[in-house]
Amino acid sequence: RRQEAFSEAHLHLVEPPADNYLAHRVTALVFTSPVPSNPSLEMILAVVESFRFLPGLAACRLLITCDGAGKVCDEVRAKRGLVTADLSNRYQVYVDKLRAAFGNQCILALPERVGFGLAVRAAVAKVRTPYVLICQHDNLFVRPVDLCSTVRVMEANAEVLKCVHFVSPKTTFDKGVDGNASFKRVEDRLGRAAGKAKVFDIPSSQGKPATSMTFWPMPSWLERNHVCSTAHYRDFVVGPGTRIKPGQFIEETFGQRMRKDLAEGGPHARYGIYRLIDDPESATVHLDGRAYLPMEERQKRGWHLWDLYERLSQQQKAWLEHEESS
Image (cartoon, rainbow, N blue to C red; front, side, top):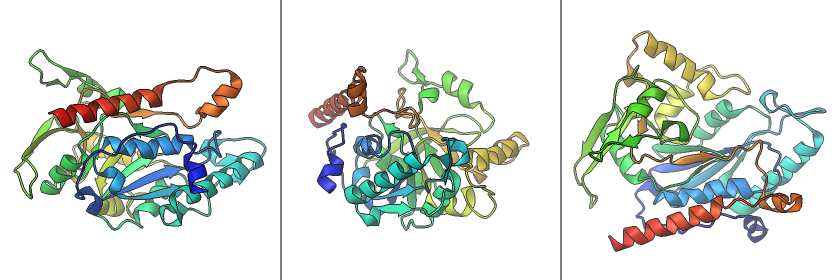
């Protein structure tokens, strides 16, 4: 059954060379819920496979949290947790296929529908590593990210860098004529309510080179892929002080409180949430689970078969060849 489940994968990447630095420090958390493409695993398999863009991440512990199906009714209303009997049944098959593909130890199936915010709270409570990487089932990485150096910088500046988000489609940036990053587009999107770009340097240690990385302080919370201190997540972001109702996102609760606090002059250090400014291009792409159609279904409908997965495979191959030659 495991081989059958993985046969649905259309994205195939090579695991890049890496040591076990991240494996002892990071747990990858992926969150899923009912979508029209169920019971197909194609979308979530692509997301997990995209972890190979981040050297060392694929070796980290993986925990896929499956929200409850929701209340059965005559129509699908995702935000209210309503599903048809057909979707509920297909979602259960989907969860069973995930178990077959990854093993029971990698699946946390919630008995009731609780929504993203409470699902994150439940999953983080299971984590034993000092850091977590959070990813939804339709947000995949599309280019290399140096997660190892990012975590090293976070460890060396733990009181400041508590959570790091990656460049998203709406926070891409330009490079000036001197080759340095131009932050105008980032500033236009995120503002300077929390300050401006900061550079963090760490010396070489344990066989790893000295590193300098740039981060932009974020004025609010976003749900895109990010890495965060587990303790910060558990005790503060989704801690007792954050009221989360079933169906709510962290962005709607903690994020709104954070934005209000900073607008009133509150210290950003309390939140420690930054955007990594490493490459002008977006590190992720949103597949939109509510509209996603697997390749097989596209073929049946006579639709154009998009080449995203093939392009990503070729891009990773070119990157690995470049890294090896240099």
